[in-house]
Each structure stands twice: as structure tokens, then as C-alpha cells.
Length: 175
Image 1 (spheres, rainbow, N blue to C red):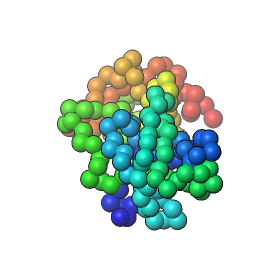
Image 2 (image 1 turned 45 degrees about the vertical axis):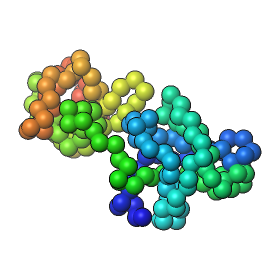
Image 3 (image 1 turned 45 degrees about the horizontal axis):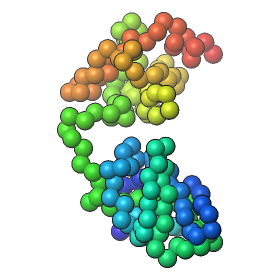
């Protein structure tokens, strides 16, 4: 299997204990929907399968894993910082009605007062909120994505209309 035939779910952060237990940090939004009987680690550009003998998901986007044949800390240590993938065939199907703030990447951001801000280049997830990044007047600006600022999301036209607080852009443009 190649990386093109798989989707990224997270990476191995550290070992736990002496018996080969590993902690995985999930960058996939809903790890509880994933089928985790076998995962693939990116080792030198090749996806190597690891069969999961035990796994316990935590609330903080992590999970503790035991893999078959990884029964010692030395074997586990070699997998730390490796990216983890699943085959595309195991990607959970999203309901058509589901919409996530991360889906706004590529939308045009328009402020009610200032007009067009630019295309949303990235949507970052922080513990408190989601933040959009746009390039406005050759300056990268960031603004929170929350119900207080979002006026409308036009899915058809891919336009996000916001009402940003007065002075927010001045912070970025002052330099």
C-alpha cells in the first residue's frame, strides 16, 4: 500500500512502560469512528502494517496501543515519531449534512465592514476555538471562527461572511 492509498490519522508520541505500549496522538477529528485493527506506520517512506492487539482511546485525542510483535520498549522506541495511516477503504463516511470549521479552508472570507478579506488558507484548531488564516493586503491575519463573528456561511458560493470586532485587523496591519 502507498501513501496515496491511505489517509493520515496521527503519529506515535512516546512509549509507555517496558512492555512495548505506545501512545498515539490523533490528528484525525473523530478517532472513535476509526477501525483500528491494523494501522500502517510510515517507515522510511514505506507503509508498514502493525496489527493492534490492544488499544484504549483517551479523551484528549490520544490512545494507548499494543501492537503484535512489539513486546519490548526497545522495539517500541523505534516507532516513536512515526506517522500513522489507515487504508482509504477504512475512512469513515461523513454525513452530507455534517459541516466542520475545517471545511472552510478555500472559502472566501468577507467582512461586513471591510469587504473581501481573502481566501481562507488554513483553519487551525486550538483547545478553545478554531482560527482562520487569510492573506489580507499581503499580511497574514488570523481571526476566530465562532458564532459571535460568523454572519453567514454560503456553502454553494464558498463564501464566509463575518463581522470582525473593530480594531482586530489593525493589530496585524500596524507593523
